[in-house]
Amino acid sequence: MIHRSSSGMGFVELLVILALIAILIFLALPTISCGPVSGVMTQRLSNMKQLHLATQQMALDAGANNNTNIGWPGDIGGSFSNWTGQLLDGNYLSRKDLCKLLSAPRMRVAMDDPFVTNNTAALVYAVSTNSPDDAVFLSSSNFTNTPSGGVLNPKDKSHDNKGFVVFRKAGDGTILQVRQAGQTNIIGSDVPLCH
Image (cartoon, rainbow, N blue to C red; front, side):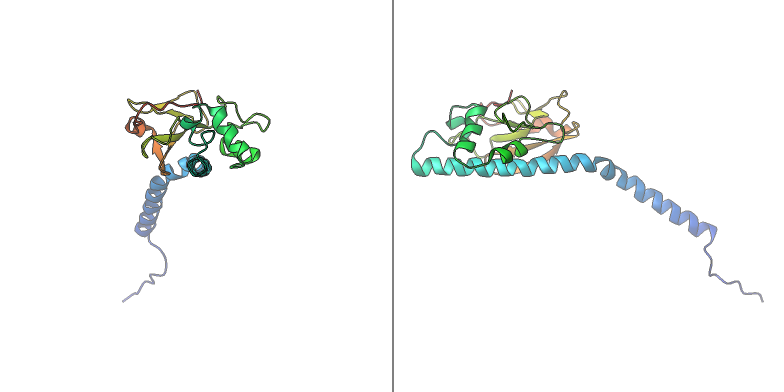
């Protein structure tokens, strides 16, 4: 009787291992190809959180001091330059931080003029103290929220249009896919200040 040593790998085992590797690569491919875009959108979400915190602090100070010159964007005249100006004047953000938070890899806000509204990576909406908590406060610039549903801006290349970011007045934000654009209806008639 001849015994064969089974220390080597057979042809069938090699095929099974190659098939498993191919399946793993196939499953990982969407994650690998979307990685940089997801990173940009995650950074945008983080930046929006910082903008929200600064604005919320400004709104709290307005209420505590009965100051109508500061507050949510809709409370201080509803313009982008009023909002950014009050954030800077009240030392809620430095000019450098504001420019960084409104920028994205392909859209840089200039330090000498952070009041320019058509070059920011974020849209700011005219929410006020009376706006409901689920009203959209910020969105990525590749997306505009409307009362009938969100609309993607195909000309904006700051996020490669693989998704968008929405941040609400209550302080919750989310990264959404392109197919979810129409599902983020704004409550009320708040309009973007950056167009």
